[in-house]
Length: 220
Image (cartoon, rainbow, N blue to C red; front, top):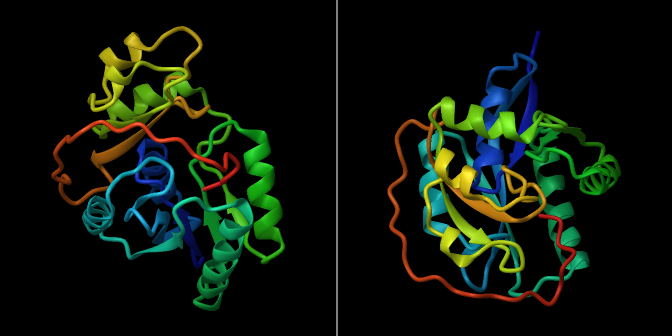
């Protein structure tokens, strides 16, 4: 039975990495493309500021071809959707009929993704959907994945969490009400090692910056 040609929406973080691991264990799918939204003005991953060079090194470490959706500095949702449609149509022409995501339990976000991609005749896959996030983060660590916290929501977490290696100590230190996978946007990570990588990704921790966004509805 032929596997379904699938691209994974790759944020560079832990959820994407674990979703890729799950998909690689599933004989129904062949993930051979990683797609990431990038802020072209700053050359960083749009959602949490990881540098493009690190994203490229990370993709190389997976051994999977990759590409980007290039976005302006302060993209509106309509600008994002226009770029997304153009890129997905390219992938569809190349034979991709499935799009995978690392979302866990944000129902409105899943509905948004399904609605937009159904219009393009692309099936959506959510390998982590509705799984217990406490169990997921423990599985992530147990499997040998390694990630660093690269972005925190200043309204919910102290800036001291930024730059910490995601381990059981960090999870224990999270305040009450913070999802252990940061599924509500409390924090984001960069995954630099684990079973989906051929080798670890080298990185260094630099300065901490504070940034505000005019448009709060981007669905990357």
